[in-house]
Length: 383
Image 1 (cartoon, rainbow, N blue to C red):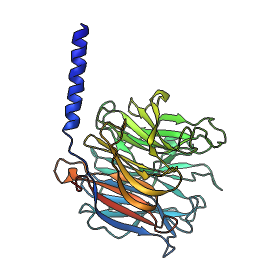
Image 2 (spheres, rainbow, N blue to C red; image 1 turned 90 degrees about the vertical axis):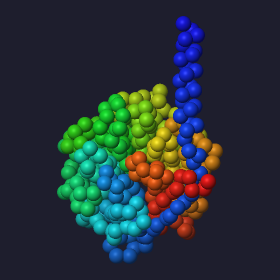
Image 3 (cartoon, rainbow, N blue to C red; image 1 turned 180 degrees about the vertical axis):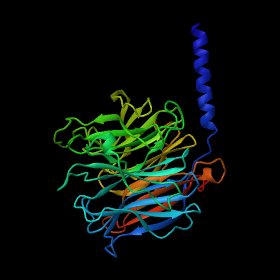
Image 4 (tube, rainbow, N blue to C red; image 1 turned 120 degrees about the horizontal axis):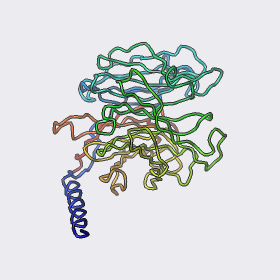
């Protein structure tokens, strides 16, 4: 019997090794890069920040950003800006505004974009009054497009269903589960404020009509002010692996344990985040920032300013083992000032679509980030 078990285990290991050996040799190269937004106070916008990027189910690219009206600060009135590309990033539409929060003192904050491929819709989830600055309560809001991002519904307040606890989705993308458990479920993860620091996920099993609270990874001490080196999970990006688990790459706000990323995994479709599934990824050094993650064709990608203390050196890494280890090589996208980033790739079976990932990121030339740029990366272009 023991010999049978060993033979079965060996067969599984050989099959996994064969699968990895069939993966093409990744040697990425920046194929094209385009500047989407430039700050500096021209017109109605002072600063563009918090970039999001997604492909729609019809193959269009949508890029979003916070258009901060009066200053570069997180608090203040904003628009949600969008640009569309119908030719896979070759050309982009002029900027239009999806949401205008008027003159709110503590305005909107992006946010997470989630595509429901079964319904053919794009949903954008954001917060209002997140910081509770001269306003109360906080609200979680949703707008939806059914025509590939050309027009958008009026904002809908999800706090009626979720409660009024401050929740900042993302920033990045939410996912629709492709594999069991809970295939088809929409999962959006984010973080809370001092009233409830930590990572939280909201779930929908009816294509975004109703939402409920799911998994939580709470800070320590919970509901109390934090000190340096406290456990304080923050902004995050969920990714579904091919085994149906959800891996969430998390900002380590107070540098607990390391100056690197936290990674936690849900095995039940976003219902729970067991502490047993929490690890610290020492390879992914991080200056405390929102980062990008993406699973494409069995490869896990990660983008951030790869520096332990400064927001510089925007870098793309990749893993052939679902993030348990990372390939030693990396692609430097930009050596200078760089901040938040987000990634997407077209889901398709064509050879051309399999070649590229897209990284949208905050990019600077002096001492801070003044622009938002999108890089189209050919995964095999350096071979």
